[in-house]
Image (cartoon, rainbow, N blue to C red; front, side):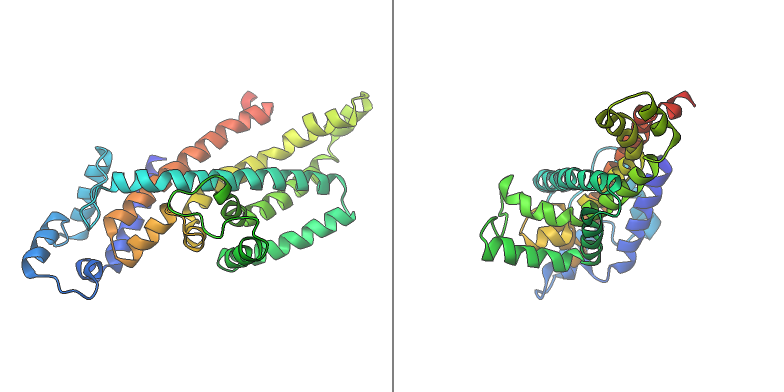
Amino acid sequence: MVVTFIGTTFVVYALMFANQNDPLQALAGDRPVSDNVRQVLTEQYHLNEPFLVQYGYYMQGLLTGDLGRTLTGRPIGDVMSDAWPNTIKLALLALFFATLFGITAGLVAGLRRGSIFDNTTLALTLVVVGLPIIVLAPIAQLVFGVKLGWFPTTAGARPSLYGLILPALVLGAASTATMMRLTRASVAENVRADYVRTARAKGLSARRVVAVHVLRNSLIPVITLIGVDLGTLMAGAIVTEGVFNIPGVGSKLLLGIQTEDGPLVVGFVSVLVIVFLVTNLLVDLLYAVLDPRIRYE
């Protein structure tokens, strides 16, 4: 985890460093930047230093809990405190819908292979996976927000849980499709396993065989996907938050990229990396809960 964290922050910092033309001018827009202001900001953010020196200053601050300041002078910690709650709620809600619908549909499809439900869901998942969020989000906004009026078209500055339902469904659509197909394949494989036939031969009820033996063992690859998806959903919310006007991490990252605000972008990405790594660590620990053979090994 430590090596991955250092390597990821180094790569992201290098990409931002290579992409910077004139971040001070990008921040000011069309307005001219005076020489005095340029000199002060250049020294404050070490823009005149070599890349490795800048990275060293950043890591020093990061390891001491100081994420630094944006090019506008605002503490990055304050920006995160405003943005993270919205993105966390959106990502967890999207993951909840993806897990609920994906595992349920995948379980039914795996137990009823070749049925109308199985073929229909497989076709629908292909369509959903093939539609990028940048296409799916405006369509969902138009149909369910404007035409039908079931959900608000935009979430607003302080989004409610109800206002986040439609963005969460859009954000978690691809994860739902992938989770459904993975669950179906895993259930279809495990339902033919020897231990399932043994459980049925013992006279166990069909519900117990499915819940205890088939589903529990089928969830191991799905849990892995959930761990990966949580970090992916948080990082991939740029388009969704932009379409539904959600002031979260995605919108802040997009703003930082547009204004070439390196400290802001690297700060947010660093926290995303930590979330991703910790989530995958928890997933690895859950393997032993789902499969006792891993615990015994």
